[in-house]
Amino acid sequence: MSSKICRSRTRAAGAAWWPANLLGTLGCCLALAAGGSGCGPADPESLPGSEEAPPPGYIAPSPQRPGDAQRGYDALVNFGYVRCGVPYPLFAAYSKLFPTKAADKLPGRTGHNTELPYYLTSFRTKKGVELVTLNCMVCHAARLGGQLVMGLGETNSDYTGSVSSLADVLGKVLALGGSLTLNADEKAELNRFTSRSTLLAPYLGTRSKGVNPADSLGAILAAHRDPTTLAWSDTPIITPPDKEPVPLDVPPWWRVKKKNALYYMGFGRNDHSRLLMASSMLCTDDTAEADEIDARFPDVRAFLASLSPPRYSGPIDGGLAERGRLVFEGTCARCHGTYGPDKQGAGSYPNRLIDIDEVRTDDTLVEEVNSPRGRQYFGWLNTSWFGKLARVEPTHGYVAPPLDGVWATAPFLHNGSVPTLQALLDSSQRPRYFTRRVVAGEDSFDPVAVGIRYTPLDHGQLDEKDASKRTSIYDTTLLGYSNSGHTFGDALSAEDRKAVIEYVKTL
Image 1: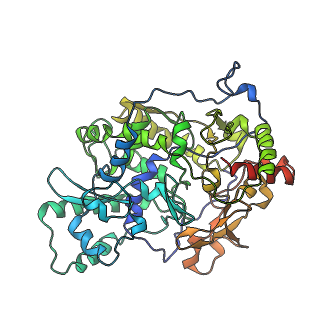
Image 2: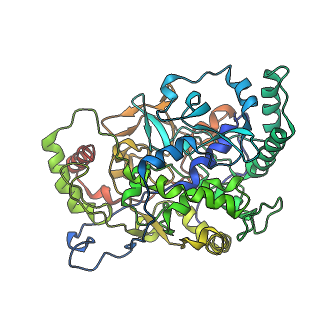
Image 3: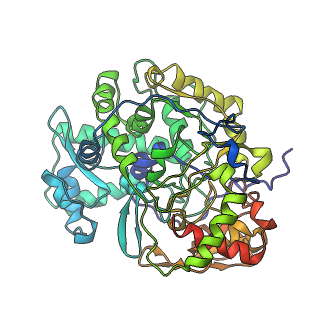
């Protein structure tokens, strides 16, 4: 039996849920395009582009379809690539109680989208039914210092609850409309959304707030689709995933420009655009509709590749940062790459897959991907409509990400188990149990430790007597939530560690 502490199957009672959580997962979590890992001593001569052979684990690039970034932005904010949702009249009745704030609106939107928050999209079906659905920004846009940053992973989502009461929630929304009635086509669309949402819900509940059930969603959607025709089946075609998903932290989109393979484990190969559009799998029920969506996604990928990370707005000690650059290039660059004098300057990213036996971070996702059940999902995709252009290939570790804008992306590691860079580089400082300090829906930023402010606790979820507080506890003893591994920074002196942290603020 694994040496991991076994997880409890008991769900925390009293967890809240609202319909956005389920569709929100759809809009983003199949498009996770980067991840965390570690590094050992640098060997600059081994970086790709030198005369030496690439380092072990190097992932070679694949040709990508060209796209237009401006058209890609338009597709992201105006086009309905998640093909089901709530009929607009029903949504409009509900939204009267919650008008959209100006700060939540995006430029360049059209039609009813001008009235919607950044994470919602309105579109019409071929039968003329206007629906409101969630888009990728529900997971891939977040506030930083009070400002909305497109492409920054949302780390305050709550997927801990149940959607078993979805029908009750929508029933109450209908009641808000008074005499509102839906026509037959609108009712059919609402039923399609609610029935599929209810079917998927048991596979998406995480143990802690702030993490995402991306991989589990992809697996359950594949289990209910014919790989060739993409036709939906109410009964699984292949074995469904476990009902407790492996937790993931949402990575930033701006890493896409440097990544030769998608996802934390680097298993997304060949055509990235087709893999990114997998968020449409909930309700795209034939290949003709899939082709229509696919035609937009080279542009979407071009937009993601055009994004740059936000600049650190606080003071930076230039001398300390320069010392940190030298330490970084001597201890971290072999895996995480080098960076020029500015974020667009010269540098080299090695696209290295680090074996789990080297990085030693939580291996639950690695074990799942390499299990017979995990490999059947890979087989499904590679033989499906998606596999005509894209490919997934099981790996045995995590890709060390490029660190552009890493200061803004806390918490760290692929499961969000480490709250600060200081704790990432000194494993003795990692809290076993902690809660995040959230103000106005945003994590409070710590400019010294560089990451999120948190409160360490002396107990985990199972020992928390207040059921309403359990899911707010990040418990690193739970399966999939470990903060182990990536101990490479432990060998640094305190001053060198401080210098590296100052340096990465400049990236």
